[in-house]
Amino acid sequence: MRNLSTFWEEEDGMGVVEVILIIVVLISLVLIFKKQLTSIVKTIFSKITTNANQI
Image (cartoon, rainbow, N blue to C red; front, side, top):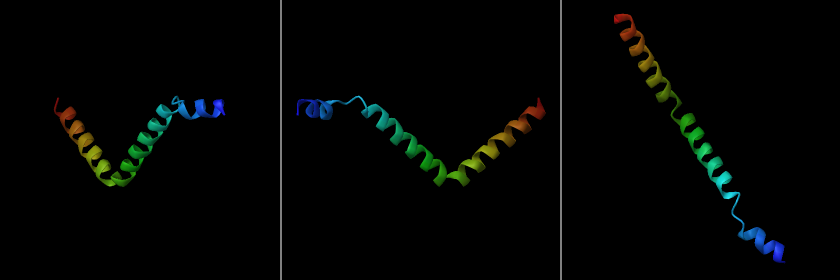
């Protein structure tokens, strides 16, 4: 019984779970806003290309 209680009190794995949850949330946000992110990136690259040609 003592080993079981120390197992429940141990919190070493909580950091891993938190990181995985953050990654899942970020991936889902990217999937939800994929069209908007793609258009923003295309706009930024077109502005970079236009300004690079002017130099």
